Length: 148
Image (cartoon, rainbow, N blue to C red):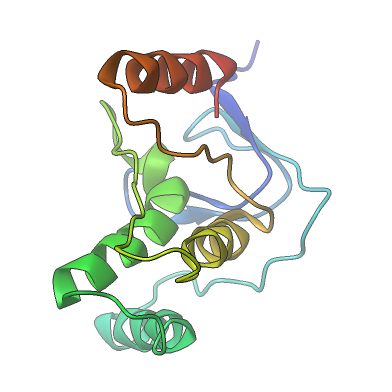
């Protein structure tokens, strides 16, 4: 009997740094990769640091015109793209990501939709910010229970 630890509709990163990118069950992670929404380009078996840097630069080029307040905020967006991909490579909690601004219409939704599309080929779940701590806690708990 095979172990099934989860189902993914996007390639997954293994703890050893390799990528499960073939449809079907992965013996190393127990993940089942089945996609219906996107075709992902093949990932080299052993990409070097130069490939990682090129990938980072290509991702950041997509948001070059977004008015991030600091480089740290831009890095957090990059982490929001990479965390869903790397989630199967580590155990323990994973961060949630918040996108805010000091003005309406700055492109927050577009920014986060782009992160989801890049990582998984679809939009990730999201919710609007609530100014009440109890309501925020309830919303986050509900999202976690649904599995988003």
